[in-house]
Image 1 (cartoon, rainbow over the protein chains, first blue to last red):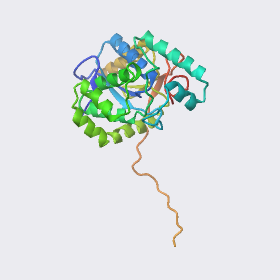
Image 2: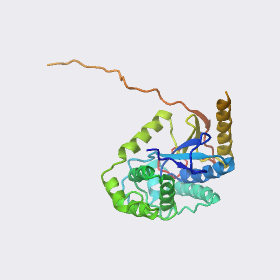
Image 3: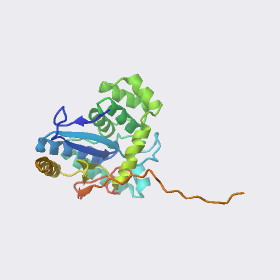
Image 4: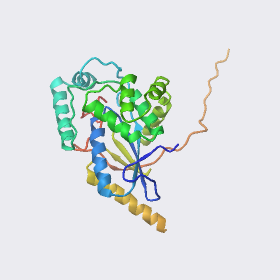
Length: 231
Length: 41
């Protein structure tokens, strides 16, 4: 089943540009990059089809990590608490600049693999973009837990997915292989950080670039596609 | 007792996809995994 979701138009046409985005639910730049890409796609104005792919930044994190994100990052990166706080302050400020109100005091550091399974479930139901937005908002803004099946099922139900079926799929790990396949493909592409955007299967854009940059790449691809159609 | 070691050549290997990297993150366009953000990577 083709389960991509269009950003600018509801139907896929020959002019539609496919954008594959590797991203993690607990990646602050991914949410910022999502907003900037959406703004770039709006500037571009043409049909764009987005598909999100799984990337696990910290697959060894326990689901029930007891500390704060600051403690976690200090331990993980070997940085003093004060430096971590300064780092989070900076990324929080950049998030504010795109209208996102990160609340690091409320964030539940956790393992995100099960949330990626949910994103694949949502993709199969044609609701991946809505699910991605809901998960990022829950994690960064609302202090939600994105590592527990019950909490994830609640979020899925909020966007209209069948809660009992979500619980079944996550309990059975029906989409775990799809998550691992995405991670393997990221390795093949040489992706070392996220967000990472693959435009039309041939151009890579790394990081939360400005909207103008995304619009410029999309325009470049549109021009190339037009030339290919003429030739 | 057999002490033979075997080697195999993957027959189903597919070529790695090739993409051209146009943009890399700078200070204001960060990415998680670079060690300068709050991602835990």
